Length: 455
Image (cartoon, rainbow, N blue to C red):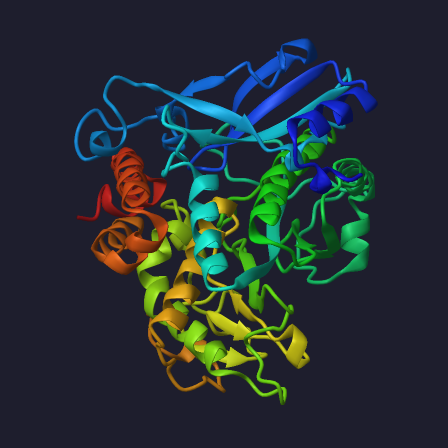
């Protein structure tokens, strides 16, 4: 029995006994995608334990800060009450790098009344998937996740550099799709694949992307919640593997100046629950009206969802003209210059790729948001613009250029809030405002270089 076939706590306990687990990491993804939680001895991990965490633990910014006042506390109680954590048995996996037999289990967050905590990222994705289920649909996604390997860097004022490979040299030129460049880091990736196999992660191909030291891992298509869990666990895994090989792995959207940014492209389709038919294709194999409406929804709502797809000030450095990242919401078939791409595929596999999302996005939030955009498009029958058949980089910017602008658009978009949850949008935007304010206190080297003596 694989972990994805575990449904009950008793089955979970049997799995733990089979694997002679002595310690359990109880994980909860927070708004940034950081793993929060507790570590318990195996004998303390019981169904009636009632493990708890304060509400604010999943509602902090990347700096660990949260608002001191304001609408945030219309959703989160100022008394800092507890959430009830419930393990999802299907998420249990071995921690392959642990010294003693250790398991990790992702938990869902509930309030004292037994309702899902609305601002917990897993709750948001579950909410959107439930809306699809009500229509008799099941969404299918396949993320492509880019990241950089960089030399160890303990000083944030020093720019990042590519790591040294087996040859004893660092990359100095771009090596897109180079097999030899991937082989430079064979010992690291042998560990990554070994860890992924032991954790039953659904990873597919590994390629070298355009940037120096930039890699991409592809995941097989599956249900959004399970894949969000896998992306969450994979990020943790590759960071750990990199550290063991004296380098860092980073999912920053734009870690190195002059190099392309890192994305999380998400392929998405929708099948009927009853017969598995892809609703993006008609019976004769032609694109369906739902296919076009889904694209229309992405086009209408992506600008307002950008704070979810590009969640940090650094994220917007990636979205620049001619840098392998989109600048607008044009759509096209087999066209990598657009923000919304339809890859060449047979009718049963017809899908839509959202190329806007950054690698730094929380996978639960990003998948929930892109599915929400498409859902609204189909529900409201939103027609897309004409297909872009040329170079979309020659068009105008259609995406917000900063986190501040993106947050204003997200706050103003009521349709997205109705699908993702008003409470989630309130907590998320309030936390991001704190982060943005912190960033604005920092004076950059560019400002000192060009403004100090010239203005």
